[in-house]
Length: 312
Ligand code: UD2
Image (tube, rainbow, N blue to C red; front, side):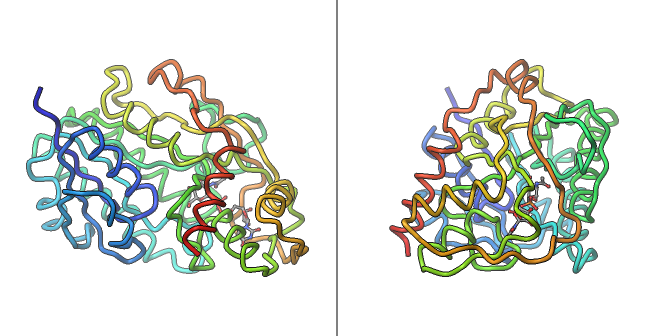
């Protein structure tokens, strides 16, 4: 059987590089498009045979070159940060909306079979009910959340108007090896793991009682690759997560145990645009994708700390 050809936008980034790695392992042809603003070539160093296209997808010509000849597009490229979008909504908008629209247009025009869009749990905002189900109302609290919502609406619209198969997977606080801890906008687990391994005191924004459905990256790779194929998934928006909920204070304690650190956190002011509680209902992913988490939060945290320790 001829293996399919995949484009992973943002494929040099954290989640994108894990997708590229698994696709190569399964024998597919993989092209990565990345502007290397946050992605790194080193993330693909151990992934043989990936074609790399360097460019900015906010340029329609780059988007067209990126999708040419691909059967499936996994659109991961984004500026994935709530606080960065609060600080600079225009730059985020360009990466998260303009580039997404260009990729959708290019995919439509090139006859791509299916596009899977990286959505975000942030679209739910602070609506009162937990866990979050896909048919619940959305109430974005930050430009980032709004931009991810527009992206998924655009994807669905392209399915309705032009027949391009699209699926949005709403990610819930993904973590794991290769997540870059190097900026104040990085994911909290990467920041905390690196600080604790260096004996430094991480900052908890707010009282630490906020909760997240922290999801190990292998689960997301599994969910996204299922979404690329599952017949019933086209035109749908689907949560992929573990279905649990851990507070920042609990996360800090677990990481302190795993790293052997003894420091106390510093408590700072709450972050603007932050969601208080986040937890996924994963029933739809189970029904439509046959998805179930394979790596628990605990096990994922162990693997992540080991990776940060080995690569320090
Ligand atoms: C949002 C989305 C997530 C994903 C991500 C983009 C929600 C619920 N989740 O993650 O699905 O789209 O954006 O990468 O909206 N924090 C600290 N100290 C630090 C850093 C963070 O206390 O040094 C707190 C932060 O205030 C927040 C929590 O940790 O309450 C998680 O922050 P994050 O930036 O890792 O991710 P979050 O929830 O904005």
